[in-house]
Amino acid sequence: MLRRFRLEEPETVREVSELLARFGESAKVYAGGTELLLAMKEGLVQYERLINVKKLTGLNEVKLDNGTAHIGALCTHRQLETAPVLQQRLPALMKLEKNVANVRVRQVGTLGGNLCFAEPHADPGILLMALGAKMVAEKSSSKREITAEAFFVDAYETCLEADEMLTEIQVPVPKAKSGVAYLKFGYLERPSVGVAVALTLSDDGKSVGDIKIAVGCAGPAPKSVPESEAILKGKSTDEAVHRLAEAGEVAGRAARAISDLHGSQEYKEHIVGVLLKRAFQNAVSQC
Amino acid sequence: MRFEKEVEILAPREKVWNFIWDVDRFIACVPGCKEAKTVEAGKRYSATMVEKVGPFRVEFPTTIEVLETEELSRIKAQASGADNKIGSRMKIELNVHLREQDGKTMLGFVAGVDILGKLAALGHGIIKRKADQVLDEFAQAVKKQLEGDS
Image (cartoon, rainbow over all chains, first blue to last red; front, side, top):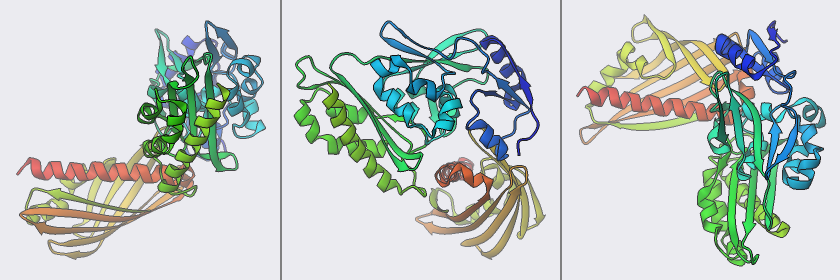
């Protein structure tokens, strides 16, 4: 049962930040509530105050500006799976959003809420990391951009300061000769391994110009894998294909996989390798 | 969940053994442990364990019972506690063993940990990882305490 709490309804990000600063750990930002309210109903967390940010204006839009998609933190998953900007410029993100949980969750759950709750099995953070996304965090006196790598600290932990609010996610739109793929493996709606690959081929289309790889769900938080990227970067696509097993092994270890009911550590590491191989080939085929 | 850890301590076995029974110093090495009290010396102790994973916080008032001891080499203990706020229980069966090796002491722990109730909703993997971290920090703190004042 949901215990009694006070609902604060600020109208600006500044007011949200001030409330967070004033009430500290006894208050929590509330947007879609798909994860927070469940945890509260279960009695796993208790807050005296919820700060309802749903009425804040300007934070539920997707805009394209100068090669970057600016996604308001209050955009729901449903909004993103149907956003024309994503459909045209970031189809991989749109596809991922289409597969987040189920339609009831997507209808009210927000991308910002998903990222801030930092549930280890959540997958948007993995793809955003491979896409080189930045999170914009604001508080009363300042605003900063945080890379996805720095944003996720641990299971259920982000680097947001106590009085900061995530307001926007900035995603660079992939350039020409680029491919982006996100693949996940799991039982029903709960992914137990997720792998994202974003790559750009050289001008002649024969070698891997740039590549970003991120893994998640298997471990406590999404993680980029520069060691695997280094194995494939600059190689001809044929050579890269031959070295995918090696890159997959490295990525598997980097995932910090945890044995649980969804699979052993070794099994998840193996699946990371399999998905990396498929995601790489999928991304190359888009170029 | 089962945990095993062995730490090498540059101190004689007697010193390590005495340290284990010095409740205040020993408890200071357990991350998140507070308000430790001796109920009956050598047999029964009480403490409160506080742990946090992201926004989730648990507080287990815990009773520790020493079941068996073998001077300078082995302790078997059991700890149990409940957090009524979030409706969860914890039970730990702990085996501590000491052996001397080239003037050093190998201090080993084997712990069987059961978490029951809503806390389990966080997932076995996350709880295991947190417990691993706690055990690592504890082993390092014990090593530091014992080697620091030799």
